[in-house]
Image 1 (cartoon, rainbow, N blue to C red):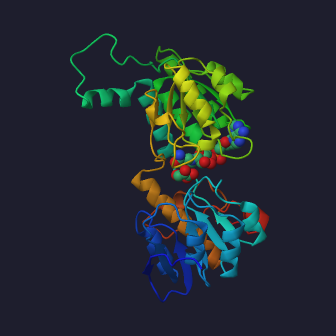
Image 2 (cartoon, rainbow, N blue to C red):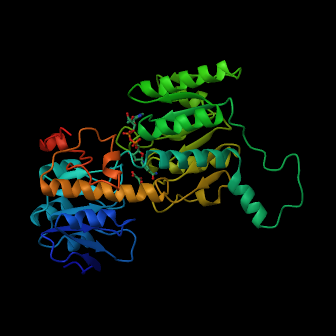
Length: 386
Ligand SMILES: NC(=O)C1=CN([C@@H]2O[C@H](COP(=O)(O)OP(=O)(O)OC[C@H]3O[C@@H](n4cnc5c(N)ncnc54)[C@H](O)[C@@H]3O)[C@@H](O)[C@H]2O)C=CC1
Ligand SMILES: O=C(O)C(=O)CO
């Protein structure tokens, strides 16, 4: 028998029981659920990562939908428990859903929501910050200052890399990868090389137009290239940022061999998922190549780091905060809640999950649709005509 977990209850007499496994930023998401007759139960348990048993205990005997987190293991056991409790709706408060077994959800007829779009720019901005922090050795320099070691300007003190005119490589040029590429091209006048399974025509057009603008101003233009293999990006780029989904094809995409392909002074940034990099191989590479630098937001065995990483001066490391702006986190909570609410109310699925702005406008009620359900097709859910 699982131990009871502590909760906070909103609108106790609501008809539909919706659980959030964590307190989430803002109150709009709570109000939207309450207005539609939901009793909202928020888990207030102190521990950061809830176990499957904790969540089973939260679900109980009657539950219409759950808003969960990327740290939780949503597999067969939880979808079976949710289904037994009468629930047909789950949403991750995240765009990535590698923690969710979508086949298991399909088996129990549970819709799986995610939160695309609202975190694109925020996440790309952190990837750009890590690129800059690594290139200009900002964290090392900050530590040096705080340690009282600065005793005057020196020609060699914390010399780093100039980005202007260098090549930025993007692996996974989807929503976030493309936004990051635009920031680096436009902000720092870098050339672009990208690798993705699909062509990113909009991104290519943007770089072409920006290059023409620079040229017309008498400046050095920028160029783009779509690589035919990931290795081409690794060989040619000076800064490489990883933005693919995590699946079987991207697990340990960066390993001992691919690290050896990169330039000795390259910068590698990861704001996708930790297991995209073989972190043991990365630590070894950082040790052997002190001029090679990384900026990491995600880790292979989160929340842990592989031995040795924390000691590496050529690594900038932050705790999975790429989507952590107030607007984005509140928006993610709203989209996750509306995914669950929409399924409970029998609303159709929003036609374009890349265009979620109508759900985020606080001055008007959101559309009567689920913003983004990843298994909508598998479950045969209708698409909104709005
Ligand atoms: N660190 C953080 O806080 C955050 C991390 N993420 C991660 O970023 C990922 C990407 O998010 P979005 O850009 O919104 O998704 P997206 O679906 O728009 O982009 C992913 C891209 O990866 C490409 N891709 C898939 N397999 C590939 C492969 N083997 N090689 C090269 N490219 C491949 C896809 O074609 C697609 O263009 C999420 O799945 C999530 O894991 C997202 C938000 C915040
Ligand atoms: O949305 C995601 O996938 C995250 O990693 C957290 O923003």
